[in-house]
Length: 568
Image 1 (cartoon, rainbow, N blue to C red):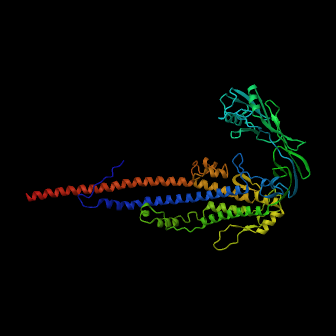
Image 2 (cartoon, helix red, strand yellow):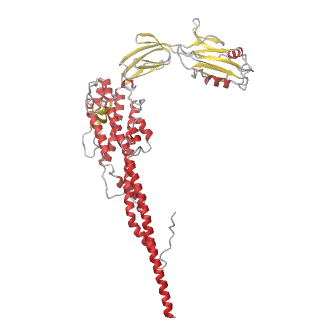
């Protein structure tokens, strides 16, 4: 702690404080210049980070829009096969009360006749009567406790696992329901069984959570437990009575055999008697959600308009990104507008400060090497022929073959934007959707070494993959340059391994610190050193003035003494 209290000018009458501060303002200019240089770096870092977030969000949005959301075990992005995309083909059901349908691009265009002979069923049991006290069964008291006032056990088996349910003398129906729903077998697996009790109607319900012939339900119990199970008056569906045509409900007793569910049975376009354990059935890329027995027709065709709209949205998002990067690269730089000092800001209105800083920030990334290289590589990759030694199986080798090209140059336009020939693209989608999807989504191969030299690039990918790949390479460069700005999770969602080199410091040699962060730390040290120097210099000035005041005071004392001598 330094004592900065000073009383000056008593002997000389000089405003020492003002004189020292005037001299220090000149000295302060050195610190202001370094602080301004640091502020420029901070602004540049902020602009880098904002652009990197735009790159990341563009990639994540397009993956989501296209359904490309898979991440490999090692953190690398893994594109889902275009054959699994459910928006390329469009399927419709002629009778949605029987079944609703969807499809992937695996499905062959055409019309398919389907008949649902039987729906898949699980095992369902319910109390056939009111089981509350006061009724014939008289099992459950008004407060939910049991009229059976002793401990007992029963075992529930779902056909694969079983669990013992222990019931205490003071247990109520809610306790029993909870015990069944949370029961686990010896191997730790939960049972495929769920139970419930409705106190308002006095009915107990229990059922399997799965369907099909593998869905089973069996209850075994000791003597007291058997009384409890039998008192539940459980009824199950035992099929249709041939005489009445109505559903037969049979009574289930404790220790009876397991009741089993039923498989769904359908006839699909001449393939009869197909059995499935679920009502959610997929055949040849066509997914059917069965709702009732009956007939319906599935019509499958390429969703030309749907595919076009997704591609158009991607192009629009890409063009927005191109426009932002072009703006940064071409912004005019106003070298006479330096960052304002604290003193300058005090003398200006807030609006004037804002306008000044807009000019000062302009052009900080003008012709930036990293951004320029990233966008140039992306544009080149788009127009490279889509043929490799592995080969694209489709008939298109250039993106222009399907109607995507670069916008014609016009004054004031942002170079590199893409335009779509709608008719040409829709025609290509309709004629050969598989070739178009491959041209868009074929996976690329990461190359880390070439000709004995370390490189980092992607080869052989489709149109979407090439754009994503080159933007990710640019993102890595920006992270090395300016850091993550607290967006580590966002970047890892783009590519799990994107931060490995940054964290290891293999590029900067400084660990997880960016080049700009290193420069900013250097400026901070210089500012601290300069402030120490200023403090010392200010004290030196005050010391000199204090010495002058002391000398003047001594001279005044001597002058007064001499005057007294003369007068004496």
